[in-house]
Amino acid sequence: MSALSNNDKIQLVNGYRLVYSATNPQNPTGKSYLDFTSQDIAKLDSGELLGIRRLIRAEQYDVIDQILPRNMSRSEFGRAILRESARRGEITRDYAEVFRDVPNYSTMKVNVTRQAFGAADSIPQRVTELAAVIAIRDAGIEMAVNNAPQFNLKPDIAAALGKKTTDGVLIDTDVKAYDFGYMTGAMPQFNKGDALHIRLQAAKSPEELQQAYCPVIANLFEEGRAYNNRDSFALGFMQARIDGRSNFQPSNDRVGLFADCPIRKSGASR
Image (cartoon, rainbow, N blue to C red):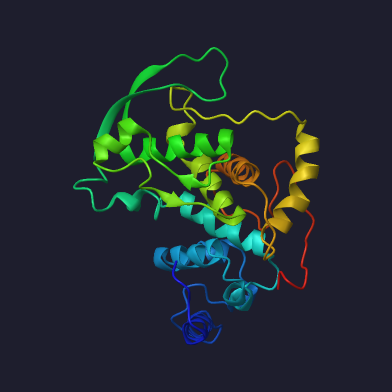
């Protein structure tokens, strides 16, 4: 996302507040944006969801903090946006569309050899799937293993798409890596037990994971905080897999893996 001018930011905030005012009869939620829950966010149109997701990914917190629901932190708001995008099947927007200059990119399938990741005794197998889906999977594994700072393409996918292996998307912040991890964890193609399956191994117990997750996810959305891509990708991936158990329904506002994280509303997160 290109940098926004101060005037752009003012117009974005004022426009959002006007549409999602409790007094606007055209407001699809019937509530003020300040009182939104995840169920209200599920009523936003897809363009609005994508716009907010891009603002969060770009860490435009001077805008986000002015439209943040009063009972949500940045991390909770961001998760609600991602979860609703996953529920609608729109989670790959922006990433798959990096190939939009390729004819028929949205339907182009490839037959390639891949191996289930994180599964014991897995063996390479031939699989047929959308080229963009394979590209996303390859990039996710590269990030999980090698802390990659960019969504790159493997040679077989680059050749199929007529692209260079470096024709991907720069993922150079913790928030972008979290977003990419959530998308990867939410994609059903990677959770079927076949050669495309992705499983992240955890050395900690569920209780230890939960205890470690809460402070890190809160800090991840603080401006200027940086964790490596591998860790941030894993945080998003795990949250998506947990959310997927309930089909990404907007049933609660709190983030958390095996329990809700404590409510955290720092000054920077308002």
